[in-house]
Length: 171
Image (cartoon, rainbow, N blue to C red; front, side, top):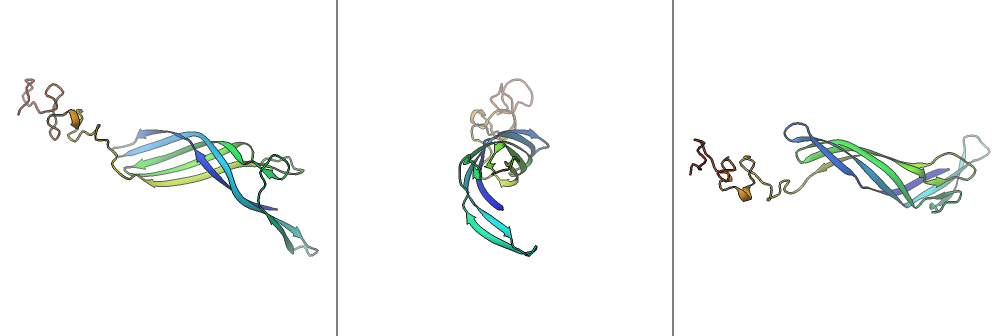
């Protein structure tokens, strides 16, 4: 018997990012994942009299339920992922495994758990920097509160330069 089962997987991950260089980050995360049965097919193949001949039987859609020969409509899994972010591009791999059987076989005590192994390549679009946190001159004072947003300065001079350190802005 062949089974081709399609689940829609929805992971809900908490992601931690750790800096690795100026524009790179290590990504680590995990959380629950919900899998919903959306379709598939079962095909039964039976051996004919000749040892190398197979006869294809019926093709059926998977049946949801908890009886023998039925599939769970909703499965709960645990998901984890790791990867790297390089500027606006990220690469990650993920693994998830179900806690319970997704299929109940007739006359068989084995396990049929939902296991997912995957990878993601992504690109971030749009601005990565919020206008409220933007600091063009990198002096630690956000541009919205910086009197001189293109020249580094001190908090005492409202972000403007003070080369002689007398507490009065140079301008």
